[in-house]
Image (cartoon, rainbow, N blue to C red; front, side):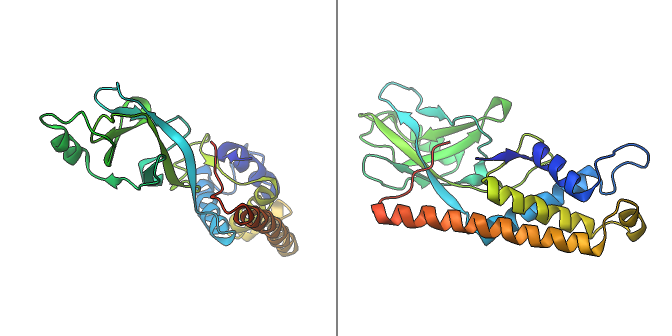
Length: 235
C-alpha cells in the first residue's frame, strides 16, 4: 500500500485542524507543509529501516533492439533512486557509466556481445528514464534494479508517492501534523483549538503508528530470511 503527497497533505491538515483555506489562508503554507512532510517521510522511513529493495525483471533484454536502449517503467523512477542494475541470469552487478562513456563504447562494431556489462541512464521526453546498455546481447536476459524505496524529494508534486503501509501512514500523518503545529503562532493555534495537550496526543499517535509499522516491517524481513531468498518487490 502507498499513498500520495496530495492525499496525505489533506489528512495532515485535518489533524492540524487547518482545513479551512478561506479568510487568512492556511496556518502553514502548502509549500512549507510539503517540506515538513518530505522531512518526516525520510525520518519515519529511516526509523523503520525502509531503504532499498530489488525490483525484479524491470527490463527484458532481447537480441534485436538496436541501439540497446530500454525505457524504465512508469511510476516516478528518478535517476537518484537507481542504486544498481544486475543481470538476472547470473546476478552480476553492472557498471554504471556516463552517457558519453556508453556512446564511446558503442563506437565502431559495438552492438554485439554475449552479455551487457555497463549502462548509463538518460532522461527522455515526458521525464521518462531510458537505460542505455553497452552492447546488444546475443541472448535474452532480464535486468533487476536496486532502488531506493523512499523518494529523494516530493518536489511539490501532489502525485508523488509516499510508500508507507496503512499503520505507518497513520503514524506519519501524526508526525507531520505535530511538526507543523509547532511552527504555528500560538494565537493562531489557540484559535484552531490546537493546545499543547493536543500536540502531545499527536505525538503519541505517531509513536503507536510507527511502532505498528516497525512490527510489520520486521515480520516481513523475518519471513524473507526464513525462505533464504531475497524478498522481491514488484511495483
